[in-house]
Amino acid sequence: MKLAQVILLLSCVYLSLCMDEDQKPLQWEGIKKPEVTLTSETSQEDLVDQKCLTEKHTHLSCHKVFCQPWQRCIEGKCICKLPYHCPKNGTTVCSTNGKSFPTYCQLKSFECLRPEAKFLNSGACTATGQFNISLKYGSRDSEGIVEVKLVDQDKKMFVCNNSWGITQANVACLNLGFQQGALDTQGSFHLPEDLHINSTECLQVHCRGFESSLAECTFTKKKIKSHQGLAGVVCYTQDAVSPTSDSFQCVNGKLIPKKKTCNGVNDCGDQSDELCCKGCQGRSFLCKSGVCILNKHKCNGEVDCITGEDEVGCEGAYRPKLKGLRGAQESTENRTANMDAERKRIKSLFPQLACGVKNKVPSRRKRVIGGKAAQVGDFPWQVAIREDEKFSCGGIYIGGCWVLTAAHCVRVSKIHRYQIWISLIDWINPNSEIKVHTANRIIIHENYNGGNFQNDIALIELKKLKTQTNCVLPTTVPACVPWSPYLFHPGDKCIVSGLGRERDNQKAFSLKWGEVHLIGNCSKFYPGRFFEKEMECAGTSDGSIDACKGDSGGPLVCQDVKNVTYIWGIVSWGENCGKPDSPGVYTKVANYFDWISQHVGRSLISQYNV
Ligand code: 4AZ
Image 1 (cartoon, rainbow, N blue to C red):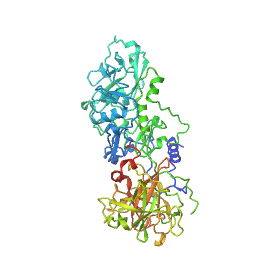
Image 2: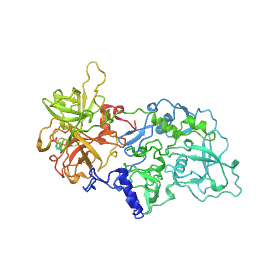
Image 3: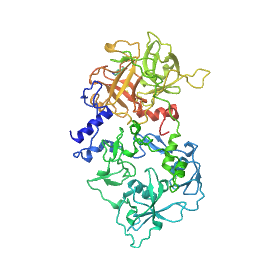
Image 4: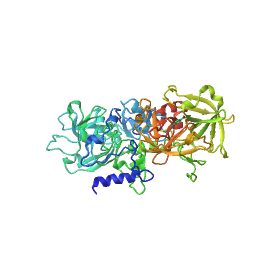
């Protein structure tokens, strides 16, 4: 067996996606997008997703990557937070304008809003010295050997070239005002023959790549043997390169060699070379969201893939300790503060959302169309909407007093006729956990179109009891609201549940569920009627499992790598029920994250990028 085949096989085992439940290879078109595995024949073009490139993703595209803790995600873009939105605890830091900030997050949020002032040092603003970076022995201002002066030192020192790479070079050039970062980490510089290297030491620098000043990176003093050990840089200037058929244009305008895309290294500086990948090369791996991440960031205690797979199955893997700001200073005398560790610490201070995790171990002992019977606690976010005397629709509890449903299920004028039933499993043999609520408010999407089911989404606010300030729903668990359309993909297995019609239009009396696959390119089933951004299709190749009349407004949920449940779709429409080639169509909830959060409040549903 050739190596390429072995790799392909291993990735099948790891992802357990190449086979369906019955161990038959999946043959149904549109079910699984194969991951690109690099072989000697794979061309660079095969690695890059051209359609995705047109969306111009960068490090600020929070549907693809996480925002920094001093930013929040609004409509797919990381925007600057106000400093008071930062967590309160931390250590004082000082900025280049001599202003001191109680936390690193506050300084970075301030810098994000007004980039004139940058990070200078951790600790108080007592040092008289400034951090300084300059380039020497180059033939132009934009290149040379890197020399820095640390805040608490009065001598300038050269930077060592071990551990110097494009990541640090980009930060250095950005620091020097070259917005597009570095072109190269090497150049031909004219070092004087009698160059005397100060005290035979250089500064080894380590950056994460998120820094805007080299002062934020960690410096360690090292002994140096020769001039060869010094770091150099050529910063990127417009006239430095001209486009060829081998160049890739970054979103920031920088041109890089195509062979440097999808390798986990942020050559562009705005990460646009790593965000639209179908495969990854070199020492990097592919996140489900199409982002290449360096292997060294796998199992390092910080989630990099929005889908979380870089931090699962890490038991036994090398896991460097998260050093705090003070810890890093104490343990190594010669090292400047570790602001990357501080950034990670700040992230850990954000509140965690309790959604999508069931209270009980799933028990599906007993045996929707083709579905299986649910038991109490299996779908704790599922609600049933009763209009007058019949169960007309489903709904999904998302936290607080809020239930998500389909717009076509409710009318504002009929608010008094609705009852929201919680924990309903079997209408004929009612279980003791059932609770009935009424609606306080109904919000229908302002662009809902009853003619073609565009924006088929609505919120119901439950009425609180007179004595209560919150909605108390003991047996329910909210499903998480997805913040990115890249969390789940065609081929992923998800679950639809509801009290709707069964085969042959038979009325149902109990909650049923079934496994369906997300289906890509659904326009081919519903030409002109399927809207990619707003809708999602799901089903099985033979149509045996499907939502039907009465399931509308109910959930299509998918689980992430940590088994956290997301409400990926709301049952909306479909041609018939349970017919092959007519999959069920769902409102794509990820597209409505901002709409939902505007109405229910960000803090209720935002677990990241808050
Ligand atoms: C309905 O009438 C309906 N097979 C819901 C879902 C589907 C079809 C019809 C999808 O509410």
